Length: 537
Image (cartoon, rainbow, N blue to C red; front, top):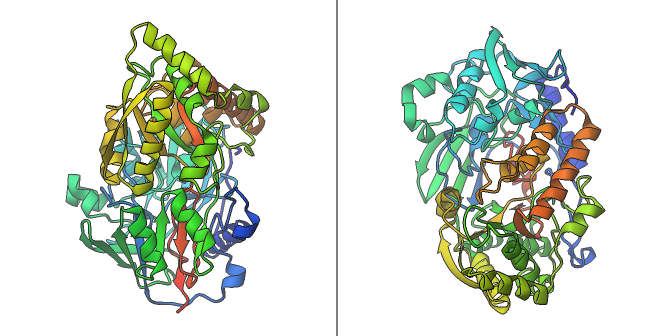
């Protein structure tokens, strides 16, 4: 990304842009052509050119993989309803470039030190107050003030903020930062682009997470926790004629089998797939439409670098070498597993032959030797593995337990509800090993910094290397695309050399829907933009 973003886009053009994004990403591949690979299928949404004229009305019923923790943008949690309430100031294109959405432009006149965010006139929050420069600054300041906020990382470069005029917010940074606009396009969890009404913040205070007020296409009207959530159309939405739907209904269905059964038997119109099992079944079902793209990220096992035994490189290497990937693919992935040998995929511009060669291959005998060396020095090789209680995660834990027993590591699994696991367990860092799904994601920034940087908000294993921190900071700040690519290649190499985590497979986050669901616009990480969605029934 350069230092400028397109300076103007009308509401009509914004919708056209979304249609183009979806069309560009509409890649369909029949299961019979896939062999043992999982390939991109409608990664960014549907194809408006083939879906027909949108119809108005109806309620879209969706099954989510967990209950929402909060609508507070400063609280770490996965909230698949949030963008329906908030929308985003900027939006990512398929190549990861941030472009205007609720905002008209974001520009830097001085190569990335000063950034001016120009807002669209007439955009209102659902409470009737304006989305203006002051609202943006109030929201960004919340991330500044709250160190635990997933968006705090992106505010650290900010030296000062001011409202140049009612529709222009200016950010002066401590240093050039080429990726700064990306923070305003990331969606709800971790970005700065979801804006809450300042009036609502004043009214509800710390309870804003249960009373969200945004400028998005829908308004929260009913929420019975662990049962259902209903959002109704926002009559004052900024994109004329949208949304097409009357309402959205979200049902938390944390059990993987129940969630998939609910889409197959017609109880819901769409589900947010968390794992490979749902994706493969969806691809094999001609009566469902699948949305998936591999992106960056992976499935992996976190090592706790802050305590024995995995503060020792030998033990991390033993785990990686001790996993028989052929057996893993056969028993856990129906022989349709896309293997991972780094955070970035083998087809990524950030992967290099050097980095691939640095990743340890399966070698059971070498793994046994490493464990014996560690034991001979008095090391304890009985470890905890914490994961969710989804059936496929339980099966994976049992598989890993058996694999590690062969090389001399005793694994003691502990299982948790997905919401508890994602919201509390891994963040407590009280584990030796923890399984995790960290992909697909759309851009290397901020995801790589979140995982690899010291103190990163997804660096749950406590990995720390000053060399890695420097590479990540340089990659985020540079405005030179070629230099950024080179730096992320070094990130891939160093993470493989340090064995930060035990990668084993690409990630399989997906969206699976009935064919009558049209107008889907999404990110690879399952963030959805709901204004364009409609039902053909």
